[in-house]
Length: 153
Length: 153
Image 1 (tube, one colour):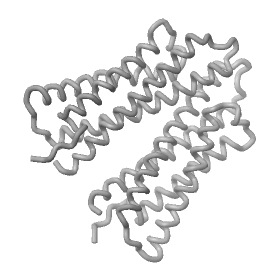
Image 2: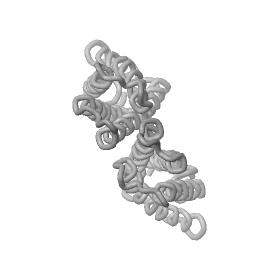
Image 3: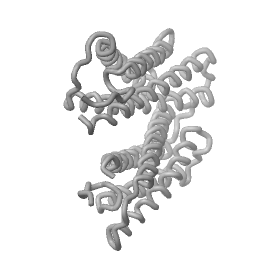
Image 4: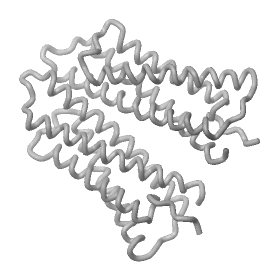
């Protein structure tokens, strides 16, 4: 049928991208939630919400990719691909927004808060923001690859 | 040659989008810079930098659109269109990041700062963030329309 575009749904590159997204967004959620009270700040709640959406989405599509690589290649339908591309796009914008918000709030907390934010806590916020950036980058790559094959279906 | 896609380079819809981008990013810069000290916060400096990039970019492409609508239609070359699409994308991501950062820092300043941020100042920050969001939305629309016609060139 159509030539293989590495990174589009059902290829091993896509499986790697999805695993990376799941990994980084779980790490971001882990650093934000564990032992830290995140619910006092809108930006941190937003990050937790978005990561809670990204993890099941990437995990589901990763399972589809794994099935497609190791068992049997399903046919790609244009309607399903459109839903996947739009979902990836929306989630990648949300992750970018959440990562930027978290990073800037963590920076303000380090610079301005009275009393100053403890280094242990604030560095966790920063690491969480960095993980969210990585997750954004991978989900942006996924959406680009899937968008690329969309007109050919 | 190719059918007209409204919103792609050289159409009147694109001219309207570019004018809107210029307007909203100028408004964002205006509310952030005038009478307010923005240079104490990384997020606000980032917003000013990004808006300083968006304004000349949108203005230049708006002039190209205006020339194309009112005088003479230039031919669209694939190389030039690729540069425009990539530039629009990068700028739309940067505007989204800057808008999210500014909005969340403004929210933290309203909620947490000791002494509390004066309402007059903080509402200007919020308005500036809202204008940056609108500018992001329009530049995202431009990049989508231009991306759509790219494979047909």
